[in-house]
Length: 121
Image (cartoon, rainbow, N blue to C red; front, side, top):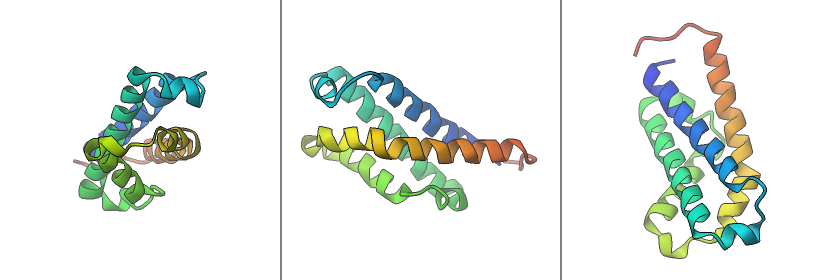
């Protein structure tokens, strides 16, 4: 895997793990009551979306292996440009229902790459 592509996957992984750390032990109520945590979570989702845009550009075959990648990019666009319509419940749901699957897929892609030879960039 090219270094650029692996770097984008690591960016997704790191941002997702940060989100999980930010909300660890929190309830929806404590999440919605904390502008700091909400902002941090939303920013990490923006990073995930941007990294996916990079994957779509540099490695469309990897992008295609990520379930709901287009929806995640759309979600990023809402967070970045539609900040006034962000629904905290939808973000919370994404954290708990969709993020774990995304991180599993990204980990798998990175692990599978670790067992094969790197391609030159």
